[in-house]
Length: 215
Image 1 (cartoon, rainbow, N blue to C red):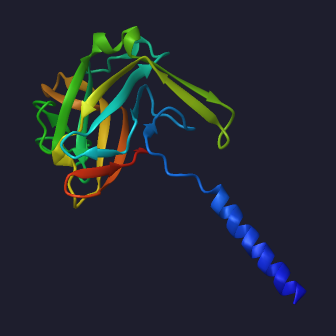
Image 2 (image 1 turned 90 degrees about the vertical axis):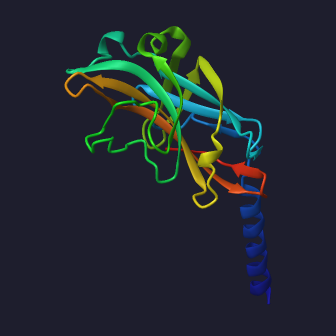
């Protein structure tokens, strides 16, 4: 009998411990300002005081920046001219790593790509200015490393309603470098990029709840 009581007491204690350790679900969005890994050169983060939005008015603050220690002289590659950085939204299944108009990864107009919603572009000269500097600081060694990212610039973007498709339940934000290919006379996406995934669910016909995951 005593063993049963002891076992029951241990079980109850474990349940209370698990409940106490569960972190409450945040009511805001904040992502891209920490973590143990960062993509090269381009960084982005996102913040919002709420996760619940009217579907016709989803506004999120996006933080954008270029690695502080990247040299301006490194911006061009052989045969390509660095144009700048572009920001896009797209829905699940519409990858920004598209095959291009002719299957060769090139585009005649990077501002007008099917199912990928162009938001804004920043010229090379503009994005290399101090205004768009971001600094990534890593402390410790993997897998216990802790890091932080600070940004000098943010801007509020409205999420296109078209990417809030009830059947997909995810949309994405990406900033990516744009190059001009002298050989093909077309534009190409560069390797330098950063992105955020936003899973979501509809609360009702007019409201949506949004989360955020770093890609």
